Image 1 (spheres, rainbow, N blue to C red):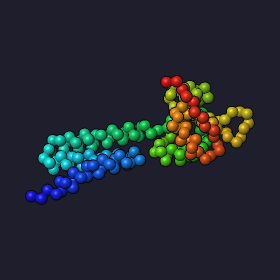
Image 2: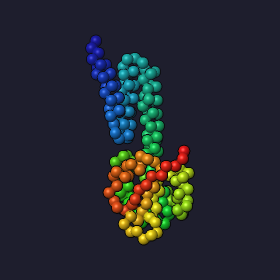
Image 3: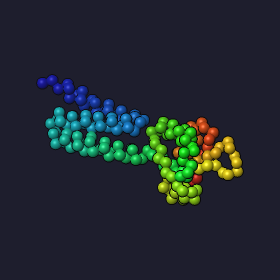
Image 4: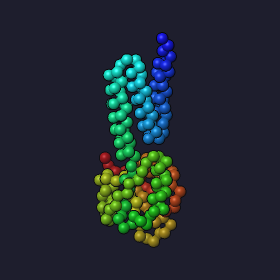
Length: 176
């Protein structure tokens, strides 16, 4: 009996595992992870371990990919706090920030607050990752907004990639 197909299917395991490791986009990695689980289930089925194949198909493919998708979706969010009345005024800045974070497969969730005191309290209490507020009231028009973040990596991303002169960016190191 010619069992060459078993070798071909088995060779797909390390190939798909390598593809998972090399993915940059987490959503593409999820798809390849699903393929890896399906190939593993197929290998187990071909080798006669139907119970292991069924477990791999259900747990290793379906459930794991579903839970990973939920985790990726919820972890790639930048919670940006703004003052409720100022949300519509900084749309050009928001478009710039969305463009920057889209490259890193992140989305921005805008959370509104009633005043600057509540906005700062939310940042200190770690309810949000960053704030965007109108600049100081000294009349400086060149940079009408000031963005503050408590996450070093977010600060580095914005600082390196922002091309808009609409905001200044600063990092605040909050105690843990």
